[in-house]
Length: 346
Image (cartoon, rainbow, N blue to C red; front, top):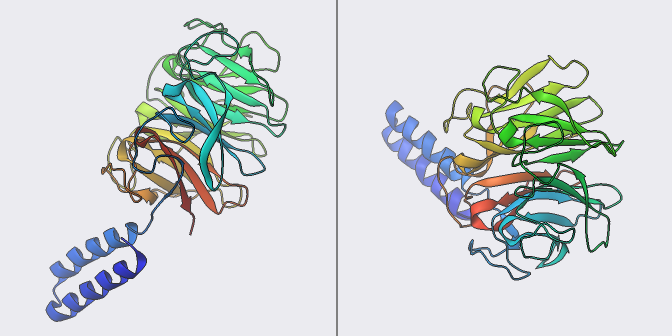
């Protein structure tokens, strides 16, 4: 629904209210007004087909997941089912393959279901491979990667990963990895052969010290905070890296649901450096939520709660989120719509 159409609709609602002046009518109209206001939060497709069709051409995606932006505003996407990482330039829907061959495999030049993705200031690309149980480092313009974490086999030891998800890298080159099926977050020091447990216990649970399918994470290095999308606990957890027992639920934690105080399998999380607001890909609610600091509920800025679809207004299991440098635009991998959407922040 466009802005002009929304204004006409709202004018009609007001005229109905003044005609009846009933409290019940007011409640109904308020709900309709809220829906109308939400409906103008349209996204623009910047990667993949706008209609949600999957494909393997350079202008198509198939279950995109990991997402990262570099300082030039270029967009990097883990193209999960196409076993590749695609680089996109704003204004052009045709991407270029910068990691992987498009064919699943375990050689140094191949990827198998890439998930988490991180691009550092030197344009090195860190890729988490779900089914190769490893993290690969691809230097800029390289035709192959180097294994820097994980053994290549499933496991629960400190040197192995189990269907890992998100990754971030700090200024010292240390890796923070969501080891999803092991219900933990591991820190791998630069050049280490095994990781250190820094969040979760390795056993699924809902206590403050436990995680249940952690999907992605965001590192606020200046404040030593690590934000974790604790998927099956339907919450965002903030870990104080200076005091390992200091864990705070900063969003959700009220069971799965569509309420503004709830989340349903959050997958992506990203923090505004300017405002401290948290942007969340609330995947099974098909929406993007923004939670300001110390808020008890979020505000929907993309999609509609509980309603999936492939038009410009709707999302279908959004996965990862990222802000551009000046924080005027939010990028979302709209997973089951096989596209990347851009939302203008207001």
